[in-house]
Length: 191
Image (cartoon, rainbow, N blue to C red; front, side):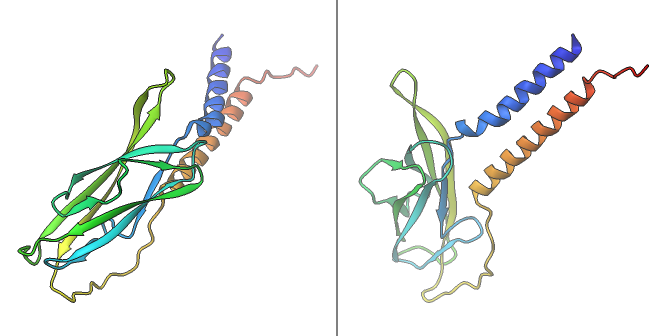
Protein backbone atom coordinates (compact mmCIF):
# COMPACT_ATOMS: atom_id res chain seq x y z
CA UNK A 1 0.00 0.00 0.00
CA UNK A 2 2.81 2.39 0.91
CA UNK A 3 4.63 1.76 -2.38
CA UNK A 4 1.45 2.53 -4.34
CA UNK A 5 1.10 5.78 -2.42
CA UNK A 6 4.73 6.73 -3.14
CA UNK A 7 4.29 5.84 -6.80
CA UNK A 8 1.20 8.04 -6.94
CA UNK A 9 3.15 10.96 -5.37
CA UNK A 10 5.93 10.43 -7.90
CA UNK A 11 3.50 10.46 -10.82
CA UNK A 12 1.81 13.61 -9.50
CA UNK A 13 5.19 15.33 -9.08
CA UNK A 14 6.28 14.44 -12.62
CA UNK A 15 2.93 15.53 -14.05
CA UNK A 16 3.18 18.90 -12.28
CA UNK A 17 6.74 19.41 -13.50
CA UNK A 18 5.78 18.59 -17.08
CA UNK A 19 2.58 20.61 -17.25
CA UNK A 20 3.40 23.55 -14.97
CA UNK A 21 5.34 25.46 -17.65
CA UNK A 22 2.25 25.51 -19.89
CA UNK A 23 0.39 27.46 -17.20
CA UNK A 24 3.12 30.06 -16.76
CA UNK A 25 1.82 33.45 -17.75
CA UNK A 26 4.82 35.64 -17.16
CA UNK A 27 5.75 39.11 -18.28
CA UNK A 28 8.78 41.20 -17.47
CA UNK A 29 9.82 44.84 -17.39
CA UNK A 30 13.06 46.26 -18.69
CA UNK A 31 14.24 49.80 -18.16
CA UNK A 32 17.33 51.94 -18.34
CA UNK A 33 16.61 52.88 -14.71
CA UNK A 34 16.37 50.51 -11.74
CA UNK A 35 17.42 50.30 -8.06
CA UNK A 36 21.16 50.31 -8.77
CA UNK A 37 20.94 52.75 -11.68
CA UNK A 38 18.89 55.83 -10.73
CA UNK A 39 17.83 58.66 -13.01
CA UNK A 40 19.77 61.90 -12.50
CA UNK A 41 17.97 65.17 -13.23
CA UNK A 42 18.35 68.84 -12.37
CA UNK A 43 15.80 71.37 -11.09
CA UNK A 44 13.17 72.40 -13.67
CA UNK A 45 14.22 69.61 -16.04
CA UNK A 46 11.62 67.83 -18.15
CA UNK A 47 12.74 64.41 -19.30
CA UNK A 48 11.15 61.57 -21.21
CA UNK A 49 11.79 57.91 -20.47
CA UNK A 50 10.11 54.59 -21.15
CA UNK A 51 9.62 51.13 -19.69
CA UNK A 52 9.49 48.05 -21.90
CA UNK A 53 6.98 45.31 -21.09
CA UNK A 54 7.99 41.90 -22.45
CA UNK A 55 6.01 38.68 -22.91
CA UNK A 56 8.41 35.90 -23.88
CA UNK A 57 7.00 33.19 -21.59
CA UNK A 58 3.59 31.64 -21.26
CA UNK A 59 1.26 30.78 -24.09
CA UNK A 60 -0.93 33.81 -24.80
CA UNK A 61 -1.06 37.59 -24.88
CA UNK A 62 -1.27 39.51 -21.63
CA UNK A 63 -3.14 42.68 -20.68
CA UNK A 64 -1.75 44.76 -17.81
CA UNK A 65 -2.79 47.94 -16.02
CA UNK A 66 -0.11 50.48 -15.03
CA UNK A 67 -0.23 52.44 -11.78
CA UNK A 68 2.31 54.81 -10.24
CA UNK A 69 2.43 53.84 -6.55
CA UNK A 70 5.09 56.39 -5.61
CA UNK A 71 6.77 59.28 -7.37
CA UNK A 72 3.64 60.64 -9.02
CA UNK A 73 4.69 64.16 -8.00
CA UNK A 74 7.46 64.01 -10.63
CA UNK A 75 6.57 61.09 -12.94
CA UNK A 76 3.51 60.53 -15.09
CA UNK A 77 2.53 57.99 -17.72
CA UNK A 78 1.94 59.87 -20.97
CA UNK A 79 0.15 57.15 -22.95
CA UNK A 80 -3.58 57.51 -23.46
CA UNK A 81 -4.23 53.85 -22.70
CA UNK A 82 -4.77 52.73 -19.13
CA UNK A 83 -4.22 49.12 -20.11
CA UNK A 84 -1.42 47.65 -22.21
CA UNK A 85 -1.65 44.61 -24.47
CA UNK A 86 1.60 42.62 -24.56
CA UNK A 87 1.44 40.11 -27.45
CA UNK A 88 3.08 36.72 -26.96
CA UNK A 89 6.74 36.91 -27.96
CA UNK A 90 6.71 40.69 -28.25
CA UNK A 91 7.29 43.95 -26.36
CA UNK A 92 5.16 46.98 -25.51
CA UNK A 93 6.46 50.44 -24.59
CA UNK A 94 5.11 52.51 -21.68
CA UNK A 95 6.08 56.18 -22.03
CA UNK A 96 6.94 58.29 -18.97
CA UNK A 97 7.49 62.00 -18.48
CA UNK A 98 9.57 63.33 -15.62
CA UNK A 99 8.97 66.93 -14.53
CA UNK A 100 11.24 68.26 -11.80
CA UNK A 101 10.01 71.35 -9.92
CA UNK A 102 11.96 74.58 -10.27
CA UNK A 103 12.45 74.76 -6.51
CA UNK A 104 13.70 71.16 -6.09
CA UNK A 105 16.76 71.05 -3.87
CA UNK A 106 20.00 69.43 -5.01
CA UNK A 107 20.20 65.96 -3.47
CA UNK A 108 16.45 65.40 -3.30
CA UNK A 109 15.55 61.79 -4.04
CA UNK A 110 12.15 60.92 -5.47
CA UNK A 111 11.49 57.16 -5.18
CA UNK A 112 9.45 55.95 -8.16
CA UNK A 113 7.45 52.72 -8.18
CA UNK A 114 5.42 51.81 -11.27
CA UNK A 115 3.30 48.69 -10.76
CA UNK A 116 1.93 46.59 -13.60
CA UNK A 117 -0.96 44.28 -12.69
CA UNK A 118 -2.07 41.55 -15.05
CA UNK A 119 -5.76 41.66 -15.92
CA UNK A 120 -6.78 38.04 -16.29
CA UNK A 121 -9.89 36.83 -18.05
CA UNK A 122 -11.73 34.39 -15.83
CA UNK A 123 -13.72 31.40 -17.04
CA UNK A 124 -17.06 33.23 -16.68
CA UNK A 125 -15.93 35.80 -19.25
CA UNK A 126 -15.41 38.61 -16.74
CA UNK A 127 -12.15 40.15 -15.72
CA UNK A 128 -9.99 39.43 -12.70
CA UNK A 129 -6.54 40.48 -11.56
CA UNK A 130 -3.48 38.25 -11.92
CA UNK A 131 0.10 38.74 -10.89
CA UNK A 132 1.80 42.11 -10.44
CA UNK A 133 5.35 43.25 -10.92
CA UNK A 134 6.90 46.62 -10.22
CA UNK A 135 9.69 48.74 -11.64
CA UNK A 136 11.39 50.79 -8.95
CA UNK A 137 14.02 53.46 -9.40
CA UNK A 138 15.07 56.71 -7.81
CA UNK A 139 15.01 60.12 -9.48
CA UNK A 140 17.88 62.12 -7.94
CA UNK A 141 18.11 65.90 -8.31
CA UNK A 142 21.68 67.01 -9.13
CA UNK A 143 23.44 70.08 -10.44
CA UNK A 144 23.18 70.88 -14.14
CA UNK A 145 25.84 69.01 -16.09
CA UNK A 146 26.38 66.30 -13.45
CA UNK A 147 27.51 63.01 -15.03
CA UNK A 148 27.44 59.98 -12.70
CA UNK A 149 30.38 57.57 -12.79
CA UNK A 150 28.77 54.15 -12.73
CA UNK A 151 30.40 50.82 -13.41
CA UNK A 152 28.30 48.69 -15.77
CA UNK A 153 26.63 45.77 -14.04
CA UNK A 154 25.05 42.68 -15.46
CA UNK A 155 21.42 42.25 -14.46
CA UNK A 156 19.74 38.84 -14.37
CA UNK A 157 16.49 38.84 -16.30
CA UNK A 158 13.24 37.46 -14.93
CA UNK A 159 13.08 35.03 -17.85
CA UNK A 160 16.45 33.54 -16.84
CA UNK A 161 15.20 33.09 -13.27
CA UNK A 162 11.98 31.41 -14.45
CA UNK A 163 13.91 29.05 -16.71
CA UNK A 164 16.29 28.19 -13.86
CA UNK A 165 13.37 27.37 -11.54
CA UNK A 166 11.72 25.21 -14.21
CA UNK A 167 15.01 23.38 -14.82
CA UNK A 168 15.48 22.68 -11.12
CA UNK A 169 11.87 21.45 -10.83
CA UNK A 170 12.37 19.08 -13.78
CA UNK A 171 15.62 17.76 -12.28
CA UNK A 172 13.91 17.13 -8.93
CA UNK A 173 11.05 15.36 -10.70
CA UNK A 174 13.39 13.08 -12.64
CA UNK A 175 15.41 12.26 -9.51
CA UNK A 176 12.21 11.53 -7.55
CA UNK A 177 10.94 9.29 -10.34
CA UNK A 178 14.09 7.15 -10.45
CA UNK A 179 14.35 7.08 -6.66
CA UNK A 180 10.80 5.74 -6.27
CA UNK A 181 11.27 3.38 -9.19
CA UNK A 182 14.43 1.92 -7.64
CA UNK A 183 12.90 1.79 -4.15
CA UNK A 184 9.78 -0.01 -5.35
CA UNK A 185 11.62 -2.51 -7.55
CA UNK A 186 11.10 -6.03 -6.22
CA UNK A 187 14.23 -8.13 -5.76
CA UNK A 188 14.61 -11.16 -8.01
CA UNK A 189 15.26 -14.56 -6.42
CA UNK A 190 17.95 -16.57 -8.17
CA UNK A 191 17.63 -20.26 -7.24
